[in-house]
Amino acid sequence: MHEAMHDPNCVFCKIVRGEIPSRKAYEDDLVLAFHDIHPIAPVHLLIVPKTHVATLADAQAGHEPALGRMMGVAARLAAEQGSPDGFRMIVNTGRVGRQEVMHVHAHIVGGNEPLGAMLPRPKQ
Ligand code: AMP
Image (cartoon, rainbow, N blue to C red):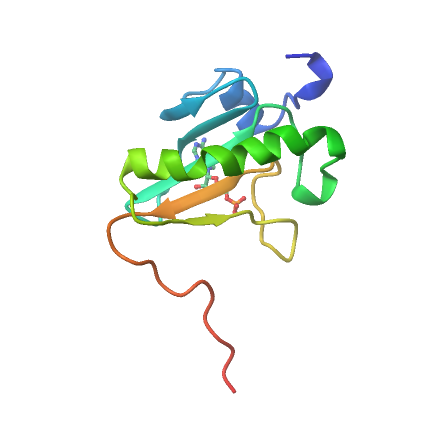
């Protein structure tokens, strides 16, 4: 990977580069998938582009192949990892999206049973 394509202070760049460990679920030329360290569902994976992009709001046209691959591999990965009958893909983005790790990532959450509601409905 070209030096400019990673951020030396980014935890997910470090995982991509093998500098810190992860439970890897899938890897190809554009993306890496690994298990979330604090799972919120029986299946909880993260899929990240190998190139550093802080948020979806920073993504450029050149990132589209990796972003597309993230969606393209999601269903197969979810099924392989124990969520064969659907799943939820979430990309928290920026302050409003409460993104904590500033490297684009899609959460894949699922399992055998339906998940809770996506967000609680505001009280009327
Ligand atoms: P977000 O709020 O969308 O930025 O979520 C970041 C996610 O990254 C959280 O679900 C964390 O549990 C997860 N996470 C943070 N550090 C690691 C790590 N080293 N390995 C795996 N998952 C991590």
